Image (cartoon, rainbow, N blue to C red; front, side, top):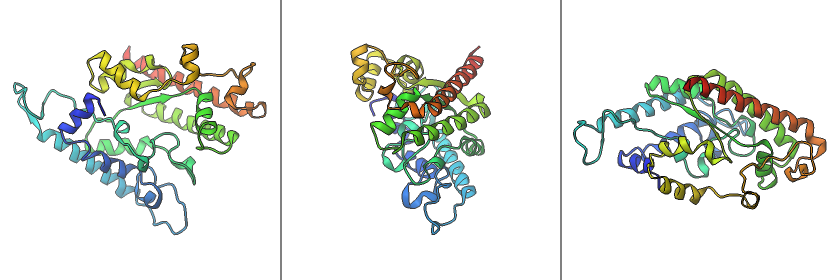
Length: 285
């Protein structure tokens, strides 16, 4: 909320005027899930109305076009530095996932929301980018990842996102396979690979994204929302990985009985991160 990009979007009337409209076209939770472009595959009951993803995609493209035209209407001469609006040389960045807010839209992760049919609730980048192309706007994505053991610990042991450890491992492994495919399909649209637990991996990207030039102000903002875990404070490290084999493996909550599936999740996770970094390395060289 304290970021410069949010202030800029408020100034240009993109937020909150357009943000909730955009999110409702992507995700509709609970009783209206069939209306969202990304939530439509989830059918809770036979009485659910039929989904129309063609119309949902067209509506999304229309809204993106409306947002683009709204921004263009506020362009002012390059020599005019005062008052609201922006120059034609400015890039207006609208970070979709940063501005969603509230439980209505979930967290737009892989997967999103809770049961039922949770495994079907995740972003489909193909239908998203088709809408972006229809609207003539530039869309990009970032891959935010986390250590597999930390994922299981956070979602299944510390929270009730999953009730069964083995089921959670298999679910997230499947999602990682999907992520691997989606990253391969759209390499030119990938603009970042960020380790959730390693601030140094995303600071150089996030600070300019939030349009914050003052380093201390950025650190203060991050510290407001990014809390270190107790074990990080004690060890001074952000690495929460627990060895697959070793005396500390029970910290992860993954028993020896589930290690074959956990090794698979770690292997796929490493492959996705390697792919992501390779794509970014090729793009910047």
